[in-house]
Amino acid sequence: MKSISKSSAGRRPHRRPGAAVALLATAALTLAACGAGEDGASASAGSGDTSGLDQAQENIDGALKAPTEISQTTELSEAPPSSGSVIFLANAVPATSIIGDGVQEAAEAIDWDYDEVTYDTANPATLQSALMTALSKEPSAVVVTGVSPDLYGEATVKAYEEAGVPIVAAGVCPVKATETIIAGPSNCDQENSVGSLLADWIAVDSEGTGQVLHANVTAYPSYLAVADGLESELGTACPDCELQTIELTAAQVSDGQVVPTTVNTLRANPGIKYVVFDNAAYTNGFDAAAKAAGLTDITVVGRQADQAAITALQNGGAGAWTVSSYQLLGYGALDAALRAITDSDGFEGNFVAPIQVLDADNAADVSVPYNQPEGALDQYLALWQVG
Image (cartoon, rainbow, N blue to C red; front, side):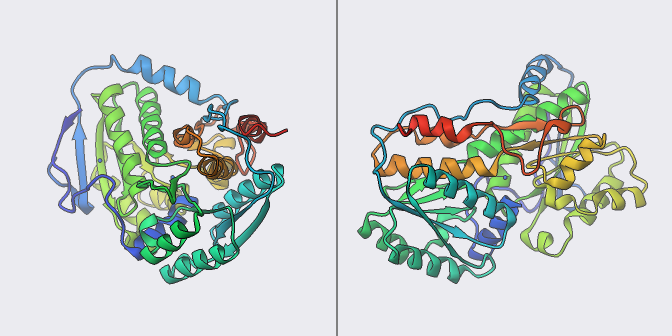
C-alpha cells in the first residue's frame, strides 16, 4: 500500500486530549492513520500483491464466530478479601450504564458492596468532585471508564495514593499505569485490534482491491489506535487497496458534521466504495444522506455496532461491524481492581477483550445489548478462586 502525504491537520498517534475533548471521548467510546484531499482527507494506496488475503480470510473466519472464552487467563495470586466495596463513576451515556451493571454483577458475585457516584461528561470539574466523593466513602477501589486519567486532577490522584485506593481506568487509551492508576480493560491494544479486523474484512470482501474512506475522529486517542490498526493491516493484507482518511474534530462531532463531511468526500472521490466509522453512533442519517447524494453502492463498516447497526445487518444489510461486550468490560474492570488489591500479575490479560465481527450472515444470532462470551463471569470467578 503506497503512501501519500498526511492531511494538513496532521495526526499524532495517541496524543493526549484536552479536558473538554477527553470528556467528550467518554460519549464517543461508550456510544471504541500522502497529498491532502478535499475536506482534510489524507490517502494511501497500494500496488499488486494479494498474498495477505489468505491470512485475512483466516482472521475473519475466526472473528465471525461468537467468542467462547474471556481473554484473561491468569489466576489471582490469592482470593480477594471476603469483604470490600467498589464504586463506579456513572454518567448519562447508555453504554457506561451497561459497564456499571457489569461491575455491579461481578462485585455482588464475590459478596462485595457496590455503589455509584455520578458526574457530568460535559463538565470536567464534576469528574474530580465525583472522584473525591467516592474516596470519602472509603472504597476498596474505584472504576472510571472512557475518561483520560489526565483529567482526574493531580490533587485527586495524590489523595487516592495516600489512601491506598486504586483507580481503574477502563475503556480508555493511552493509560500510563502507576501504583494508583490501574490500566483496565479495552485499551489501545483493543482499538488497534478492531482496526485490524475491519481491514481484514474489507480486504476479503473487496478481493484485495478495496478503495476505503476512514471517517476518523482524531480528537480521541482510542480512535487513533483504530486508524493505526486499519492502516497497518491494509498494508499487509491488502497492499492493492487504497485508504483515504478524513481527520474529524470533536467540534465536528458535536455539530453533527461527521455525516455531511463524509458524504461530501465520497462524492468527490467516486472510486471509494467502503467507508469506516469509529462508532456506530456517527452513522445516524448516513444512509439517507448518501442516497440523496446518489451514492448507492457504499459499504459501511465500523467499530462497536449499536442496536440500529445490528438490526440493519439482521435485515440483510451490507457491511460489517465489530462488537465487544460492555458487560464484560465491567467484569474486566473489577478483575483489574482485584489484581491491584491482591498484588497479582496479569493486568494485560484484559487489554484486548474478545471481539466479534458481525455481518448479515451471523447478526441474526446476536442479541442487544451484545454480551458474549456466555458464562464470562463464571470464568472470571474461577480465576479469582471464588465459588
